[in-house]
Structures are given as structure tokens and as C-alpha cells.
Image 1 (cartoon, rainbow, N blue to C red):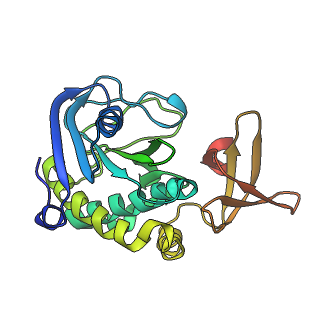
Image 2: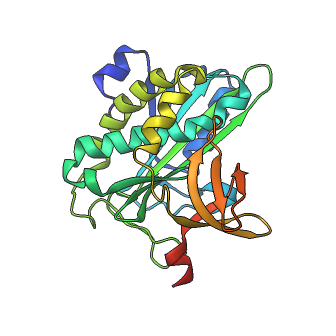
Amino acid sequence: MDLDSAATRAGVRHVTHETTASTNADALALARQGERGPLWVTARVQSAGRGRRGRGWVSRPGNLFATLLLVDPCPAERAPQLSFVAALAVHDAVVETAAVLGPRLALKWPNDVLCDGAKLAGILIEGEGTATMSVAVGIGVNCAHHPDGTEYPATDLAAAGAMVTTETLFRALSRTMLTRVAQWNRGDGFASICADWLARAAGLGRPIRVRLGDREIDGSFEALDVAGRLVLRRTDGAAETIAAGDVFPLVAAES
């Protein structure tokens, strides 16, 4: 896989593996060894891929597994905003390489890209360090395969009718991510990122169910707050701000 020329000109570099445990783990290990980024780490296969909350991420050949390492990209409290930045960049790259899917794509809070309501891509942001923070922006896109029997339905580009190779998608992503990170501007441009994300949001203004660690809440997805937290208008009329949780369409949750 190769970077887009725009990324190369901007000083972005790339390390690729045939097989690795986790591109996020590799990126953070390199940061501990002094790597300053920006650096993409990609792999054809992951043996220990993971998603949010320690969930496993099925990593079959033919799908895209990529992590962008950023060192000191922003104040620590702004790092979670990179989920929205990355989701937009993935959306942009898929639209560029498979334009026919554009109207069928949506962004699911806080970190997924959907096609026809099924999960096409996921994002995992991990960071470490205090004086200087290193952030791994992990991105997995189902290009040729997707898992079956998942609680939230999944799909892939090929199943959706778009034959896009990992090489083609990564090249586009390396450029669209560069553009979206510049727009975000260490968090100073997060308002415009939020506006763009909301324009592509799944479930905005509709009934949803949010699963938290110890409970579930039903309501309507009303907005994002200034930090990117979900604002839920509960069925009792009160508003609740949610920093982390799993979102399901209410109709699907009750079917």
C-alpha cells in the first residue's frame, strides 16, 4: 500500500506489515521508541485486532487495517474528537473510491461508518503519555469481508456492490485524513467538524437506544454538544448528555 502524493509531500510516512498483532499497538510502541509521526501503520492481517471496550475486531485479509500515529496533536482533553475527524475522512475516502455508495453512507455516534444501516468501518482512538501525548487513530474498513452474527449488523464494500481494494482505499484515506486533520486544527476547528459530521449522522432526530455500562436509555438523538457528546432527549422529556455508549436504532432494538 502506498500513501497519496499529497500525504508524502506533507511529511507523512508509512510502515506496512504482512501480519501484526495490532496496528494501534505497533504505532504506540514506535512512539515509545521516539517516533514523532505523523506515521501510518498498516497491515494485511491483524492477529489481535480490537475495537472499543476491548472487543475483538475480526481482521481477515482483504480488509483495511490502518493506524495514524500523531504525537502532540492537541491538548489531551481534545483527543477523543479525533473519532469524528477520522469518521469524516473514511466517509470522504469511500465516497471518492466508490461514489455510488455516497447516498447510502452515514456516520454512527461515536465512531462508526455505516452503509445501508450496517457497520462498514470502525475507529479506535488510543493515547498515552502525559507531558507529550501520542495518539493512535485506528481505522478498520470492511472492504471484502464482514463478520456475521454480530449484535449490530455489518457489511463490506464488496457486499454493497463496490469492488475497492485496500490499496486504493488507503491511498485516498491518507489524503482525506490529512485534509480533515487540518480542518480540525488541534481542536480549534472542531465546530466545523461537528457540523460536517452531523450532516452525515445516522439517527439524528430519531428514536434510539443508548446502552451504557449498567443501563439502557431510550430517547431521541437531539444533537452533539461542544465536546462531541451525544445529547439525548429522553422519553420523559429531560435531556441527558452521554460521553460514551453503544447506540442502536430503537425500532431495531425492539424488533
